[in-house]
Length: 480
Image 1 (tube, rainbow, N blue to C red):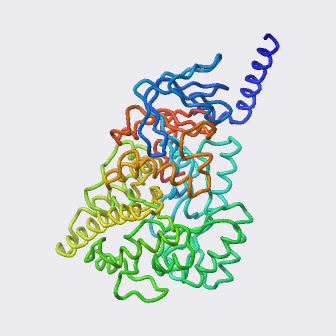
Image 2 (image 1 turned 45 degrees about the vertical axis):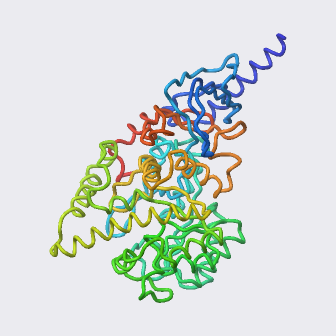
Image 3 (image 1 turned 30 degrees about the vertical axis):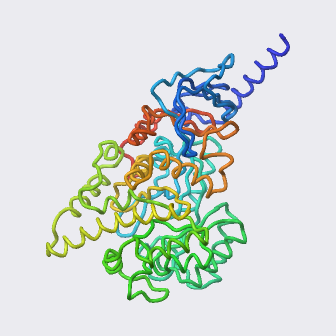
């Protein structure tokens, strides 16, 4: 017995030493709980499968994994016990449109290599897909530093540079004109470690098709925020995912020409004259589902374009630099003020509000038809969508859209894991899964707004202090 006890003690000490060597002093500043054996007791479990919450559970964590979840669990000797009465635990969010850059104006974006990784993790996002990179070398370096425990942040799936065509409004994007350029770009960046690509507004069908084929040969996926190519055209070409939903699909514009991106105002004006129940839109949904094309919901970025709709939160304003905050507030006011022609402005305001509601309805119908809906935030737009906070807002908006809180959490966790091919590891809570989970005060299975009350975020079994991470980047968004 003494020999067995000594062996167990030696094992626990070795795990502890390994953990201490893994994380840098910079990361350890944000660590709240780190022990070889952890027992989360008397906690409500929302497992991410969509099943009902289970009350008064005990989770045993060790070696970066969930060892057990049980109502009658016996706390192992030597475990650090965390009493979580009145708290819930859910899987770490899987952010599927979570850039590392932020808008600086005039089509320029700045990499937020310090603030964004910490904010994602603080908000309960333990895995992200960057879904378009402005600085892919930087994103790859960040991923490496996070994996090595040098800096704090979520697990990263790095997307290559945008696959864009001629006419881009963003000068930081390379414009591809031939199929061979697309093939060369895909192969170059897969060799350097990216595992996803994103096609953008002005790409042609020929170039997009070549990129998709090249990516699939290398075992990676392609998504798209498209304009020159319609959703059904992209599905036929074999695209894996489409970003943003109905509001960016130009195929319903009567004046649409092949491989040309029409004016956004014109396409939106045409779209809002339709109903989501109309046959052409339902046909698009059917073809996406038939081709197994996923759809990424990014409601927070579009909510901000509907005047006076999005809440103005101190927690969001507090992490912005003074310049970023002032610019966002100016943009917000500008959207709410009449322009030179009040009638034109009112039409534009109604158009955005109508398009936003149609986008929600489109996503609901897509899921009803059997489609795989993913969740992200897209920290671009007018500058008010902030990592972590925006991911939580996306889940809240999914509930407003018509999903139950449990369904919305399933979309934001399990579905993303499924798309990334990591469903056996993350996205749901079960024995053997990675100990990537979020502890929140309250019960988001009943009140989804409780998802904002994050206290501790476990990643690989280490518990990070959400408040400390947020405080460390106060005033930095927009700077670094």
